[in-house]
Length: 241
Image 1 (cartoon, one colour):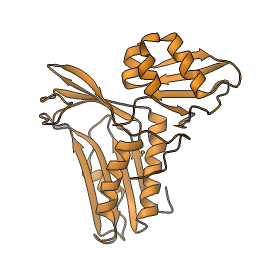
Image 2 (cartoon, rainbow, N blue to C red):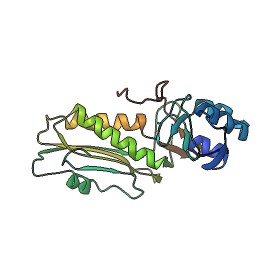
Image 3 (cartoon, rainbow, N blue to C red):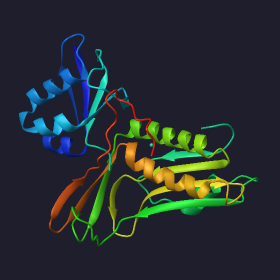
């Protein structure tokens, strides 16, 4: 039977393609798909071995069974509506209008909005990163990224039930120094209703489970930035920070 394979970040670069189909036996598992992928691309054996797998847009364990036509994605570790409250999840390629986002998650009951906005840093004093960055390239497993962003929003609402509106946005494509890359905003009736804590949780959780990667490009070369979070042995990702 045939399964559809999606590759991201380092794996995509090494395979020279982001999409392909693989023939596997009936009853094959995710681990069998890994082996078939290594047979196709032997030079990627280490990358494939340590890659996170998803099955039909959710994290998968190596023992999970695949069926004909399933969508299986492999990617390196990632560097995510309730009631009547506004919820905005997006993967834009254009600059994020902060005022428009605040307006979108503000209601007549809102008295406070906490907003975090990440930017492209030109100079970095951190081991493993080039000291100077010319630009960043962001890519995502878009359908799964939106699903996981929804999960982050649901976790926020569970932890901080007084939070009203939530916006989670991650830009994709080429971004130059000084441009905004990501935005988390949470509104509430009062500033002590959890909006500060929720926004901080949102950006940390997004960087943990939402499949988005960035490539740092500088005069010295380029490299994908990979995280260290991995789902548990059963493919779960519910152990929130």
